[in-house]
Amino acid sequence: MPWRIHPEGRPLALGAALAASVLAALGFKRAAQGAAAAGLAAAYFFRDPDRRPPWPQAAVVAPADGKVVLVRQEPEPLWVGGEAWRIGIFMSVFDVHINRAPVAARVVRLHHQPGEFLPAQRDEAVARNERRFYCLEREDGQRLLVVQVAGLIARRTVPFVQPGEAVGRGQRLGLIRFGSRVEVFLPATARPLVAPGHRVRAGETPIAWWP
Image 1 (spheres, rainbow, N blue to C red):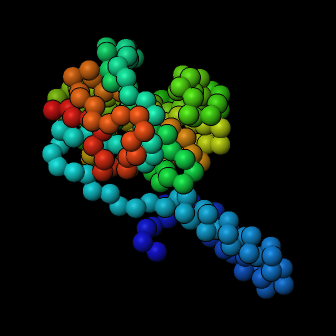
Image 2 (cartoon, helix red, strand yellow):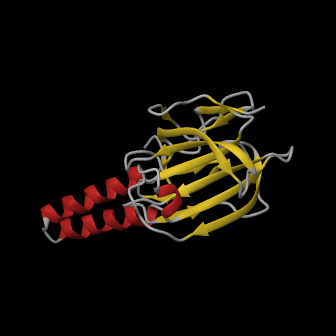
């Protein structure tokens, strides 16, 4: 297999494989095929490929695989503290769901906000849906915000980091189960390099230039 399965998905994939084996041994061929298909689907969804961020460090990399659905400037007073570039990326169920740090930074705060489960493609989902905030700060004191947004199907965000932890650019931050959206808020001094409709890969595709 060209990619590993993240530990979050291994119980699902292995459980389905075990069920398929038992059902096949009992003679339930069709049910065994269904269980095997479910196991393969779980393995595919929770795939965790390695990614290599590009050089130089001023290139902000995408935090998620998927399609850019929003690029605009607006106030972000809670963490960035002023005008910010907001870049939204929608992940389908077919995209890799491991989310990554856009820059090298320190995790200052994590915050989980309960909410609704509107379709993640809708702009208002970012304000109304369940979401998790990653408040990050670079060595020079500049701040950015990464937000995992739950969706109609995605009902759970899973962080891999804790406050106080230093993360490298492209390092795994967390995941969302099963298909949703990730938002990045960068200071207005950053320069976006993507537009709505662009496809991006987490940890590899430059989405902004931020010296």
